[in-house]
Amino acid sequence: MNKLEEEYEEIHPKIYAFFYYKTGNRVTAEDLCHDTFYEACKNIVSYNGHSTLTTWVFSIATNLLKKYYRKNKYQQSLMQKLAGIPETEIHSIEELAEIKEDTKILLLHISKLDDESREIILLRIYGELSFSEIGILIGKSENYTRVTFHRLKLKIRKLMEVTL
Image (cartoon, rainbow, N blue to C red; front, side):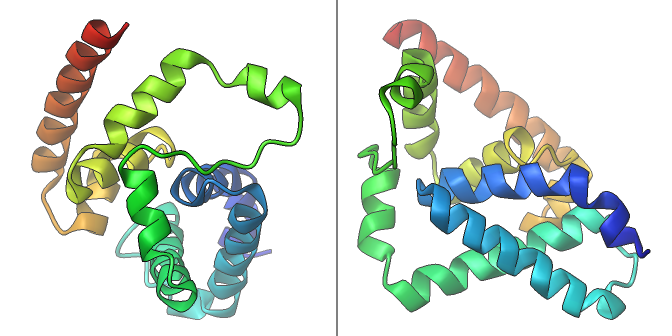
């Protein structure tokens, strides 16, 4: 059994949450998740160990998401999401009730951040990546990522206090 198979149970929910937030669609998130692990298994021999396995899988996920948006011309839909217009898939009243108002407000504030800031927040919160891993993915230092995340957290906290 290879390392990817051993880590799958831990990495899979993080990748799914990342895709679900980015697409707002459960089925699409599941499909992209499947594609990510298919690509990872297919290309595991190219994993050189310069980063963690989680970082490597997230880089595959990020590339697949970009390909998905290009292929399906989701730029307009993406802009609506970033502008705070939700396009979620809800199957029941119970699911709707589970979405708390403060979570919606938080996601709205995150959606208004610039691309790099939003990526740092999402990879840290939903991807549960370390600052070092996030730094590798965005091409910045671990310290830059750590300080930026801290500043963004304080900014969002202030915005949440004003909104609530």
